[in-house]
Image 1 (cartoon, protein in one colour):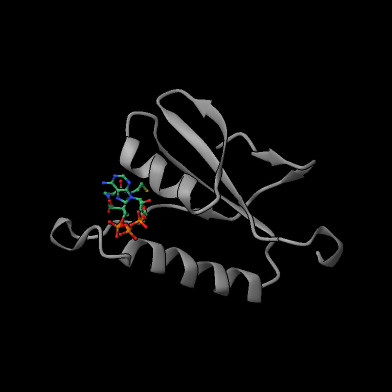
Image 2 (cartoon, rainbow, N blue to C red; image 1 turned 120 degrees about the horizontal axis):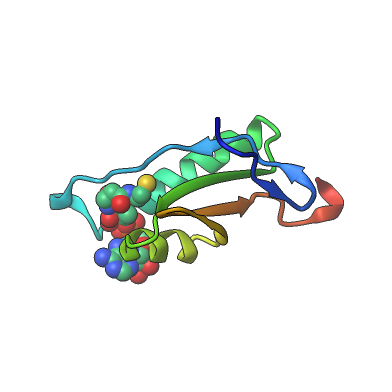
Length: 93
Ligand SMILES: CC(C)(COP(=O)(O)OP(=O)(O)OC[C@H]1O[C@@H](n2cnc3c(N)ncnc32)[C@H](O)[C@@H]1OP(=O)(O)O)[C@@H](O)C(=O)NCCC(=O)NCCS
């Protein structure tokens, strides 16, 4: 079982397993739109942070997520774990 990811003293259980856009359709904003739609759904559920893993050597993926305001939380083996805080105003969450 995955060792818990602790972010701001809280275990981040919600996980995005993978996103894949067909290579013929990349670079058109589809990936960004998928992430935004997911986040609207998560906020509706009251979830304030989620995580994902990507291969450390996948620079396209790392740039993609960093530009969507994920933070690189830690490295585990070949993977980097990124976390996204969905709570823009801590007083409201
Ligand atoms: C990562 C992936 C989902 C991005 O999807 P996409 O639809 O091409 O991405 P978008 O067009 O929405 O791009 C959003 C931002 O990501 C960044 N980005 C996307 N592709 C990039 C590339 N090849 N190089 C650098 N930055 C890139 C850019 O900042 C871009 O914003 P901009 O267009 O305003 O500059 C897609 O490349 C993919 O499916 N890759 C294979 C699977 C994978 O690695 N998934 C991620 C691990 S789970």
